[in-house]
Amino acid sequence: MKRVFALAALALATPLAAQDAPTLDARVAAELGKAATGTRFGLVVADAQGREIVAVNADQRFIPASNTKIVTTAAAWSAMPGIGNHDDTGGAAVRVDGRDLILTGRGDARLSSAPDCVTNCLAQLANAIAAGIRRVHNVTGDATLFPDERWSSGMSWNNIPTRSGTAISALSLDDNELNVTVTAGKPGEPPRFDHLGYVTIDNRALTVTGGKTDLNYDRLPFERTVRVTGTIAADASPQTLRFGIDDPAHYAAWRLAAMLRERGVKVSGTVTSRYRAPDLSDDPARRDTPPPRAPEPVWLAALTPPPLADDVRTINKVSQNLHAELLLRRTGLVDGSGSVADGQARVEAMFAAAGVPRTAFDFSDGSGMSTYNRIAPRGMVTLLRWIAVQPWGTAWRETLPVGGTDGTLARRFKGTTLEGRIFAKTGSLNATSALAGYMLGKSGKMLTFAVYANDIPSGSSGTPMMDAALVAIAEAN
Image 1 (cartoon, rainbow, N blue to C red):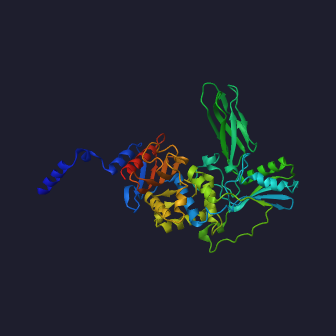
Image 2: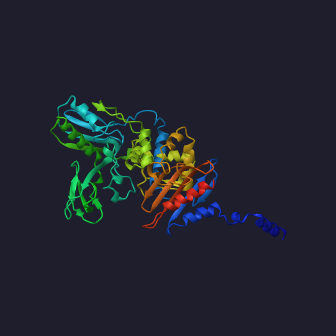
Image 3: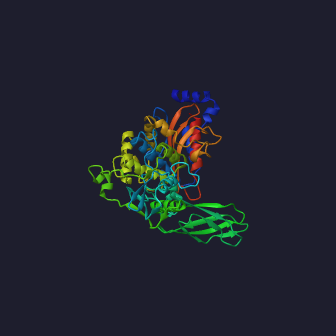
């Protein structure tokens, strides 16, 4: 009886506002509860000492989408700690083989044929060739550095024609994308297409008056005819479509041959490509020693790209899929053949070093396009806390988007407690939204977090609820 009285007296002594204030868990639950029925959330937020402030489905596994790039870029930095201290040695190179030219990819993702290119340019190689050679036979694009795994397991096949699912190759050019400009014609007529000519356009689109621009495209794998359908408004500005490329090494060789002709070099043969078929030696579980490395060829010319850390920034800031996939394969070259399995072996080693249980994760690619990928929120937070104390952790964190400021977070968290105070990698895929990284609480405390929404019903979003929950947590800490 005395205990009841004491509790009643305490309640009466507590200000009414405090009695009515919801707990942080209740505020978070209320925000997440605004999502469409069926949405499944996972959330963990930990303080600087590792104490969990909020935990929702902490050990359930979720599709992480592009949160996968956290894993890929951290594994690369862990395996190649000098990643930010020198220029990249993975630039494309060219050599002469009899009367033939061999354009060789060495893993870099940033080779460009753009007219305004100033560094890491295919034109630099063309100039070097034209300076001493006036006639060549065949031009071959060599992508044999990695085994031929142009698409990772678990990626949706319908992404293949798009820039999001373009093929992965040790020899890559222009992000393995084809840019096509579409200009409206007269009402009732097809629009005009301007492009390099590498593909054939099956133009089934229509210019309309008073309608909206809604252009769609598709093609079959390994075909170079793209069917474009839909409409473009008669008063619309020119539209840019970006197509994925299935044979990047061939495209790079094709562009080099065109540049050589522009410089007066006669190309009398054909443009071809070559890849390396995967074999048992590409699976780290089936070999005892790393595969032998071929000696470096004698190059006629070779490119030296900027530091690889610059590309890590691109991968994380804008969520560049191709670059992430190539980085995973380059990580696998450290002590393997450059296969996806080799890259994932380095990923597993990193998780083990971070103390993350093996049951907390599974990954099949480097970009997050695979629906086979899984991570538990608690596992991701554990990994992020481990990254933070590595010698390269601060440099790595600076590659993440900043809320309300840049990258894929440029439009999120504006006008909130977390504007300029959240540093995190986004993720978006069918029925999936993700965000993980670091944030400063209102008091200035650094918090580590991971939040996922899976099984989001069609036409709905889990992102606003995730953001609101994080803001509530930041305001309370």
